Image (cartoon, rainbow, N blue to C red):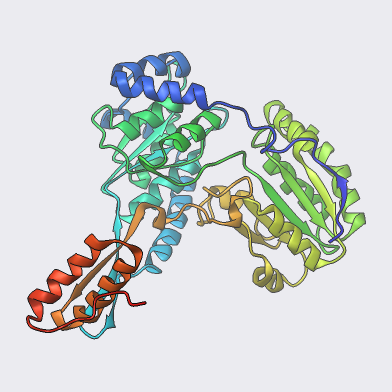
Length: 435
């Protein structure tokens, strides 16, 4: 495969990853030992907030009153879409059972975890949509207690729209605490919270590292890096829309990679000329992020044909994958590695980020090669069970005894022996593994 890089990134999210493990581990250890007092100490230090951390019903109601009705309507629209899509996902998972051999029945059950912690970013941007995506999905899964945790602003608290979205989505507790201390509070069960069995939601590198360190003690949605997005475009694509989509995703952060994969040199050159102009037209903070991401992390790749374009996209395994090319059904059938797929210019990553329904918590840094994004399934345990008659268990017990002895696990073998001796007294069984 020959790929021509019309623009190559001097940096990547992998090579540029900072080492924050020691800092985060020290904070987690400190909070686990010191409890709520230490969490509040870190909140005062990092959030510069000393107000109430567990929101009361009155505080939630006050936040709701502060949200304009038009904003509430948009949040309700997005939440309804996310809820209905999550319900569809849940409907695809059924409790099942089968008779494996005559007399031996085995089954599968899906059981929601009892407590979940949802982290909602609120620093540079107030991620209202993240409250919707995480809390709604956990609620549909059937989780008993959901905590929504978001960093408060100094002397103000959580952005009212985040509070409204989390409450609407079904959060049982809303915690005004950010960063590692917020993650720790949910994981360790501080401030009267049940210990979270699963932690979900995006966050900065410190939040991501805290979740990574805690993984094993709790479940997590995924180990997240900077958000990334890839656009596949052929000669039928509109260069201005392609450029706008790349810029829209680059504004996430200075290290958010965006990639264009195309088989049309003219389109590539037009997009490369348009992007800097679109970036310059952004507000200052957004402009700085997008400019840095485009300069240091963006790539434009010219391929020979659509098969090479698809193979390139699969190699990158992007979090978001947009296709603006002819024969969208071909692309839907061919592409294999992405967090979420957006087909045609009539949809875009921002739709998925905010309001269209499928979850926006997605695998980054190439993880889409082996996993998908957040869904109701992440908050449910797939467990198995079995039951047998004695006749049904008989051949299983015989095979278990022989396999166990073949492996050298005599104790395992004897758990089968004792049952056969009790159930079928006087019978001779060949329970040695053989030659």
